[in-house]
View (spheres, rainbow, N blue to C red):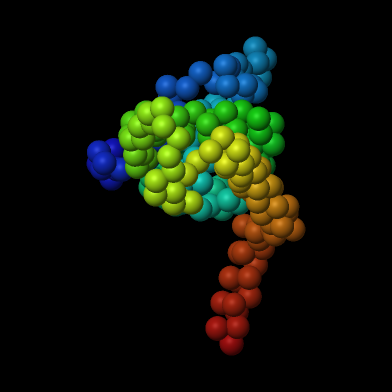
Amino acid sequence: MDDYITKENPVRFIDAFVDKMDFKALGFKKTQPAITGRPGYEPKDLLKLYIYGYKNRITSSRRLEQETHRNMEIIWLLRKLRPDFKTIADFRKENVSAFKSVFRQFTLLCNALDLFAGELVAIDGTKIKGVNNLHRNYPKTLLEKKLKEINQGMEDYLKEIETSDQQETGITSPSVSELQEAIDSLETKKDR
């Protein structure tokens, strides 16, 4: 399975990034399995799935569940785990505030690794506005506004995921017996 995922594949970065996180400090729930019963899915695995979904514009829990059955990258990332859509959706609902911390931490990491195109700015004592292009001038009020927009964007994305899950609640797949009945009726029609 490892041969299908190249060394440069972004899935490997997602795997390494999530494995290094302290889930208790970030505020994720159910980081320690209960003493009784079978342990549930690790939050690390479900977070890897959500980050992969974010990267590939898959917002629906049902679509993420489908991808765990057919997408080689996700199968490798989750080590062949296949959580159902309800488990995926519940994980997100229980850990909304922790998701925000992860988004911030991811942004800080990308900034530390120079993955953003930052420019060096030097300021001396004179107050001269030279080329004051609106796209390159960030006073404190504008930075605060941008941070609010970023936080609102995170909220909107989480709401979009919730909406797509709610829209799909009425969709059901036919059972194996229903599929077999349909196949049998089609074969009798073919024989006739």
